Length: 295
Image 1 (cartoon, one colour):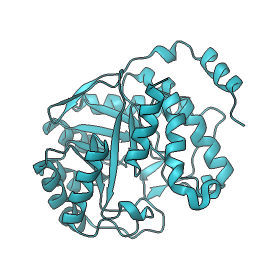
Image 2 (image 1 turned 120 degrees about the vertical axis):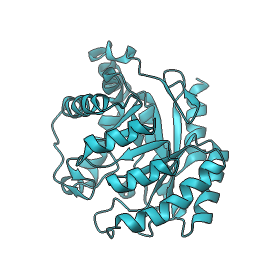
Image 3 (image 1 turned 90 degrees about the vertical axis):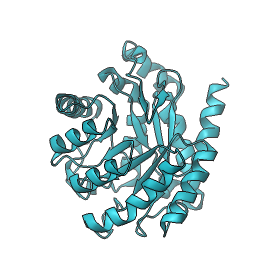
């Protein structure tokens, strides 16, 4: 059971890290002050394999309309993806991804909405940035140098996701050490160095809590790991860059109330000083963050 004593002990052991500040920057001409106020990223899924049915859009027009609604509800950025990260989902080739993504990116940018694209493909990255995407949600490690160069050339930002493998569709087992933060810190430190060496300065880091790992299928083990990382997020901020979290779902605990899971995890993420929340439930997450601010 998570307790006040646990939170107090966590802070006492890592008090210096709790004061860490992260880099602030602009995307699409909009300044983000992460040390003062976190941001929200709403999700639009273009893959029919995506499980979160409310986020799935079957046409470009529907996707742009959902993006506009999410922005009106409080999303600062809209994250668009054309291939699901689920293990059983169909692979989607570069051409098919681009044909789905490009009209949506252009449509959202025409509405002056900031756009993030989730992909691990260099070809899809290039096409998306050329179409006006402001942020790359990078879900792979292969060809990262070339991808970082593309991001830098377009003055875009990148979310570096922790992936234990070549990409989110080809992962091994997750290292379930007692304290996951040192392993995550080492991974991100290496990737940040590579990104900066290739000209990227607008960086988020994402521990990848929403990704599929075979040895995280036990619900109690998975949720315990997710909660631990959320509460320890402030320790990753010592790397100097804002932390993004994709809020998970915990079906086994929430059952038919699964749409309440992301708001619950948002509280833990906020306690850990998360800077960017990726969510399917924008109005609920905004309400959670607004309420926490009132304290």
